[in-house]
Image (cartoon, rainbow, N blue to C red; front, side):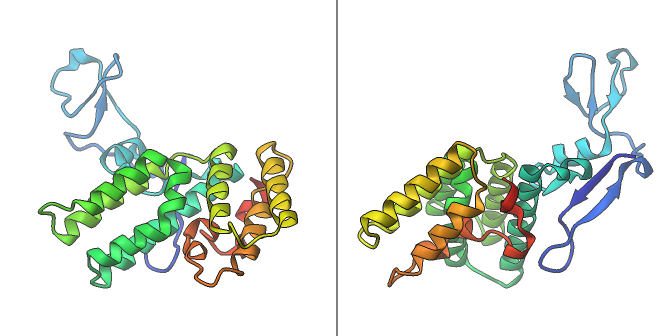
Length: 239
């Protein structure tokens, strides 16, 4: 039986399975695929050889920004950490919108999530920055919707080690002038070992968090990238 886990519902983080074999869409107008792989909306021409796509593919085609993952794939630690990150960010955006926030709050949200988004897609981080800098005539609800679509789509990409290392090197820049030679060398060694696959992500990130406590104005410590989910989940211990 095929399953999905989707992060929707009340609470800080709600994950529940959807059993696809129990869901069979029979209504006209569902998303279809012909023999050439082209998607369409009509089955009026039986000569096209169309077939109805599985329910979860139709769902993601209509809402590609939803945090959805097949349950079996969550055994992969990289995919599991990526999925939980998406669930939490999705829920934070829901709470932001429900709280009657404004554009300034969304800009602050983006500021805190900027390095997390950059780890997934530097281009997406730039596009989101431009979106908030030029909201045009969008209402706040429309702006949140556009932001949600872009950030959630970007976060579907898993993060390679080289990009994690790039983000951590950027965070090291905040520590310039606050570390002695030995501390800098230790951090560089940890980043190098992480990049080579010799240690999990949790090790250099934990060290960065330790050193960031030394900063008088700890802007970098507000970056969600450093603590995207509760430490108790230990999701970064295996990636």
